[in-house]
Image 1 (cartoon, rainbow, N blue to C red):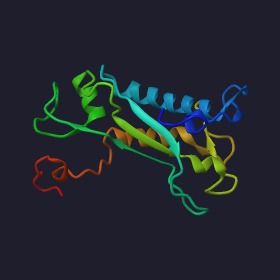
Image 2 (cartoon, rainbow, N blue to C red):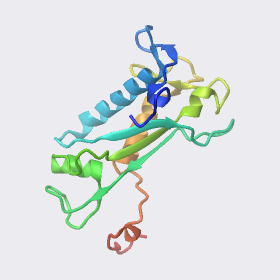
Image 3 (tube, rainbow, N blue to C red):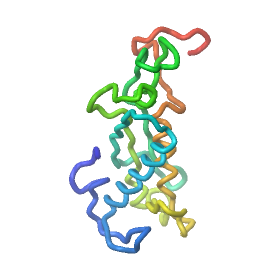
Image 4 (tube, rainbow, N blue to C red):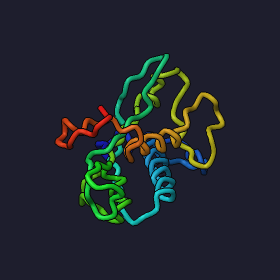
Length: 178
């Protein structure tokens, strides 16, 4: 949880739970959806490696015609670790942990994810907000399903569509790639 008191994942705004209809907080619903997304990825990845995600809600670009829902990426690369499929190849640290079967970087988070807090303030389309339910898509077509956004952003943290300059960060150039 990268948010401060009374914001993002700690937002105390009372809301009704999308699953149970009971009272909870906006921050608790957000955290519940994030944990559910992490559990889904965990089932598919298997292995014994640990992946820590530093998640938070902050304003991201948003207008009445377009919005960034979230963004995420790896915080470190690893190479030549136990069980690495290829020598001298850089892997996002979250994926390296899974392949190695252990935590390679200690208490440091492997993925940083930021989600757009302004969506819940109506920045995109006046009546469009995140839907934090995890058991079904939003029954309201004006709500943006948050769980697919979480799964998508966590995939970026695992290295899907990684945009990283190896040469600028001390790794040798790879022939044929720029």
